[in-house]
Image (cartoon, rainbow, N blue to C red; front, side, top):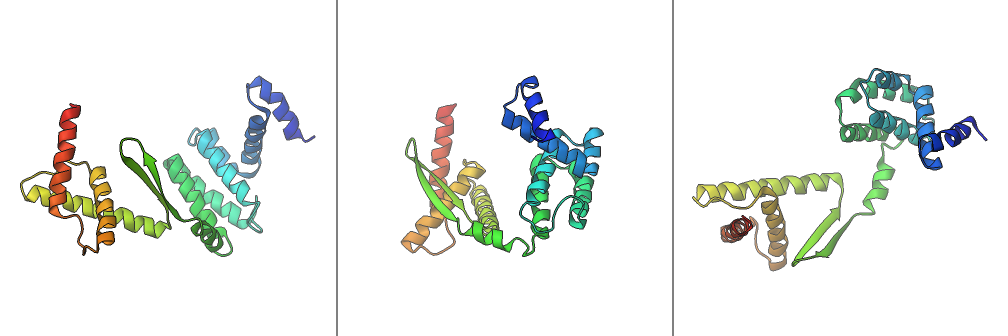
Length: 219
């Protein structure tokens, strides 16, 4: 039995934790103190909370299990810790998570191409029935396609709003509602062979009046 296991067994009842949870907590603490002095220093100074310090510790130690030659004390590890220590205090948990992932991809021998290829094979689109005559559409696509789609929906939704305003009939839909209508119109147009640009002005007034009526009824 290792010292970490003994400590976990002792702390679990003291902290009212499941033994496995206690083991994880001890492992993170040991890794932080032993292998990440800069991150530990930020934690001690109160400049980095436990969640973000644990995130860095877990991600780097896990990466050491699949990245050849990457581990505590190696040049890439030391460089990455320095970069994270410089930026982590100013980042949210989500921002820090993305930064760590980006840095780890750069450490991979193939730049993360193999992982991206595996992830891309899982791409899909799902449509799930929802109550009240609605459906939930979800998709897993590559990041560039996601950015194109997000940007297209934003631009088209804003154009709908601006055109309605210029015509003197303000669009009563929210931005999210307009985005959903643009996506639906895109699919319908492709199915019916309608040429782009999409979402005719007549649809705008119909949706806007419907959403406005619904808002009035809700009030």
